[in-house]
Length: 279
Image (cartoon, rainbow, N blue to C red; front, top):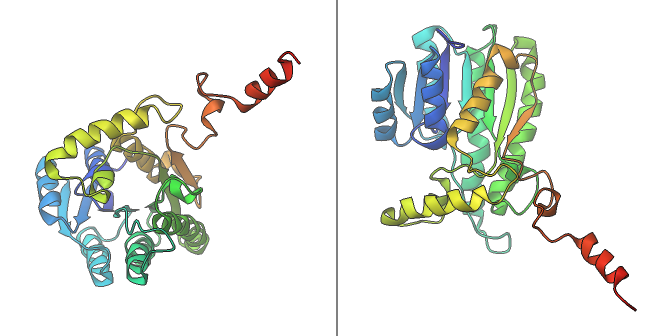
């Protein structure tokens, strides 16, 4: 019961990582305000746990973010933990085709929403013992090739925002960290690709299989993997961490495939074979 009596706000809580994290915090004694623009989704979640309160919130609307934080703080005298998690794939167009509107919407959804979540939560967190903010970034922030460009840039911005706000809020005893998921089996991929509803389960099974073979840890990443990392960062066990980010990706970013897959072709082996070939 690491979070007994704590007030916790989680955005994007209707599904995937946010949903699993809300359930984990509630199991460990927190009063969880589960927010999502999918209000029916968070209402269904609240029925699973008496510790969860459903709140309708579109994080692209700053007034709704403020209202969410004010509601949580009013109910419990302040806020102890915020998980700025809401997001989607954003605009998938390449840089030579993307329109300004698509770029702006992606930044509003993935970066501005995190900044405004911090902005409107922080006044309610000052002086609260163990106050902690966790932001969802991504391995896409590390380099190209993991996502569309706009998404990657926004998630890189979340990392810098995390570092900057960790220094600004340290004087109030508020820690700010981030988590960087790898390929986690959630609805973000099927939604981004606009997979028809009748094919979602098949698509998720394919994602599960492909991701299991794409990284050193030979299983698919699941929402619980990220929820556990978030809980650690928010807990007393993570109290010496701020301005940091936990990469939770099954090792997919550790290096090229031949570094961990003995069956993968190795360039230097091929060159050695050429050198040793009969002249």
